[in-house]
Length: 365
Image (cartoon, rainbow, N blue to C red; front, side, top):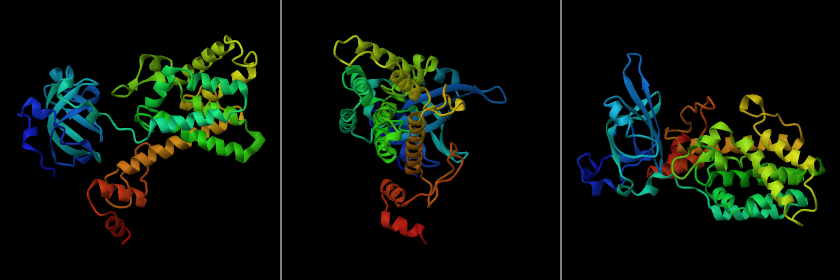
């Protein structure tokens, strides 16, 4: 059980409460909880007896944790809202194989009582390095229309450049952290580049690149990500596929209005193909794709997007898993357990202050 500094208890002074000494990553079953957190999600429900309760998702820079409030729900519901900093007293327990905090007390904190960066998940990647790689891909494009479109969006638009460097790729599931979208885009573009060499003239490399660049470009506005990642009103009503197509239409119109920027009117077929790759990248109707892939480039972008998303999601799940041994706990999304290779055991040992080699040796006996 974790031992907690007495200054962090519920009766401590406001100055002490600014100190974040208890982290979500380190909480174990039966640990007392007395610490500040950022509220990522909150909702009020009713149990089978008609009693109100609250579901919360608390977060800090080390992770997220579900919490349940059973008492004083009407008062707390008005305080523990999304994006609020709160002091939480309670106890960590196991529920259906997952950690959960049963909350006994909640107090709202002012932003000047906390260090905000303690509550925002740190990006594991270098935004400037990735952005330079992205522009490197753009520079190698050959088609003057496709290249000008890529430059107009990814190089010349200051607002988009700023958002590209900050945006996550999703609210959850994959690349769900700052700069995650850029990491995802650069990753799949590298794979698309290799596939274009492998399949040669059967694939249009520049169209593949635009699929890699733009398939999720609408997420720059579909999501809000200054603090807690959530869907914007535009994102809920329109969605990133349509928003991406709208951006392409807008940027092509701007290019055509600039004398000498492109060799002539943007070819209709090229415009339609770019839009199709965006609209079809989810692959199937049941996955929210308004069109299924009907050209090779759209098919390839769909499969590589899906592959890269899954690799990141499963890798992140394995890295975060705290289960002892070579196997993770149950992954509910994929409905299976995953084998933990040496790199995962090494990371777990490092987090827990153990010896990586000893951990791996013990698991092979």
